[in-house]
Image (cartoon, rainbow, N blue to C red):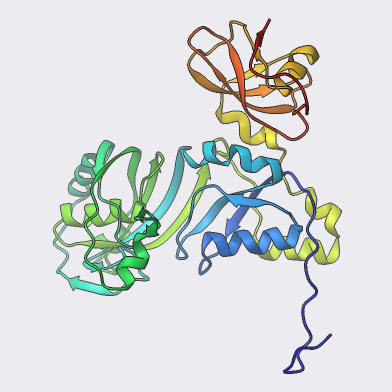
Length: 331
């Protein structure tokens, strides 16, 4: 079938039910949502979501959840993450990265490794950070970047974030009087903006800075990820077929390793699946847990209350029992 301009129309994707986690190596130049939609169509997955946005400038690990795995995506969003970044000293931009417009340029002073390390140390630990105005944070239901692009004046309140590590990897360019770049390693908790860290580092060094490069290395619990590029996935699909492509997916249980786990027998799994709680006591109390059956298959997420009782909160499709009683606790 051809369109009005006589160009062949791409066949419409026929989506299917698919569950699993893809560790995508996001390329530079695509938004996280654009990358998600490409792999969702490639895998023909009915439902998909990503766990923590990467800026178009950034590359690296973007965990993509298909199907029932989207039910644990929220927990992965809050996971610890690691990055390698290049800070370009001497230039401040409106987006705090190389995609923005320069706001001001300053001379880079003579900097010793000791001076740089001291500045990095002061930005480590529990700190207050002001997110970039060009960010996906919402105010009044609208992303801040949309307001910034319209030229609106935006005041962003600082918030607490956890910086586990902020270390200098290489300053050879700077010390050799070349391009004033610092290569840095960052490990941080949920809600941290590496762009803001680099911006604040530049101010501490007295010259300003922005992110020139950014790569996400890992996200808990995927500390040594086998990542797949879009090109590698497309090549597999073309030359090996969909069955081999599906083998690139991790099981949902691989993403549940961030939660403490509770294993139950078949009878208890059936009770949980019908919405009933289990008296236990189960550890750890007051925590969300991953619920597994006796074979180690994930049933979903549950909550352990202060008394040690386990109650289901988000069940996977295969664990839910329709029409069963709900709300009562059983042993």
